[in-house]
Image 1 (cartoon, rainbow, N blue to C red):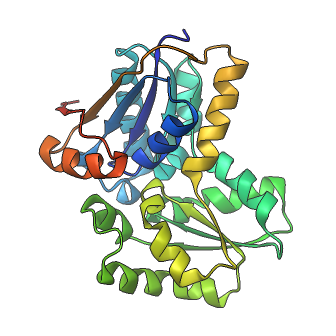
Image 2 (tube, rainbow, N blue to C red):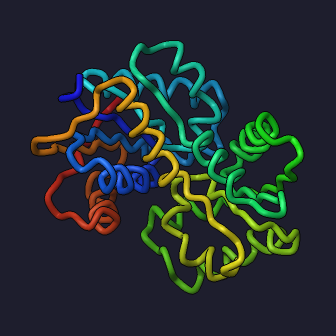
Length: 264
């Protein structure tokens, strides 16, 4: 099993933030990444749709012989993680719980902010998870519908991106939060903009970083960690391979892979 791949899935390119962190921490691991660009944005879908998509994609990745799977999407994690765990007998993890545990450790004034997609916000996945562990903490949320298309188009630090971000972040800044969870893996690529607006006193919690450490713990516990040999990586999309490939190569700083088109 330790010679098999790790599967990652997302609605698009946001999950590459998780892949990037995993590649730093576990450079020998083989990667199978699935971007469901044709059916994004996930934040506007129903829970039943999201469960269907997640199970479809994991079934596809299982044919590639994955040994574990990361639902590298906050929306899909909120909607389908528990169902997916019941359906499959490999380790499956999401990105919400690792980020929550990290945020609770780092807050000083017990005021945590969460920015996320519409589904994750309405689902209250983050406030509920925080309440289970630390009910005394106040959680303030806001959904940011324009962030995903901004990232998918590669406009990470454009002036328009700052304008949009200021609008979304204003109520959280006024609420005097000291910790902010980037509750969508796409938002990891906007950290500079978000940090510039929120200021150095607000700690940003990136689920990509938190998830990579928890993944290593799981692989170590299951004794399926790959520690030597060359790594392989394969990338798939339901959308336009050319468009996805252009931005993915910028994100990963890697010109040596191709995105394969897939129909589910």
